Image (cartoon, rainbow, N blue to C red; front, side):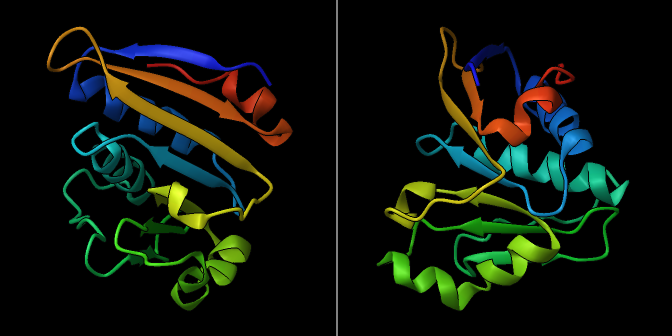
Length: 155
């Protein structure tokens, strides 16, 4: 699929993108959240999960220290992984990724820590700084399973 490049002018735009993608997501999907610290990966994940919970106030802690948080009581179950503290790709098996792939959507921050592991139904969302402190450039690229679904994505 072709890459889609969007400019997010604010945190609100990041949240709107998350809601739009949550509406397109399915069990078995993986969304890689790439970007340096402070680019909006956790903001995206929170908005995605809150939309599926139909609750804008649900607590969505960052899994930085726990490495994974699962949300099984949503309209679509979500497992949120933060692999920043992973020492080797083999450790991912201990976190329950196999279960997540068969029962939920997986949001994976720092997917670079997966090494050479690859999966089907993957969307890469790469965030980087924009022209202003609040602006972000996001690049979306996915496998064939995302082709039609990305046509419906909006801010």
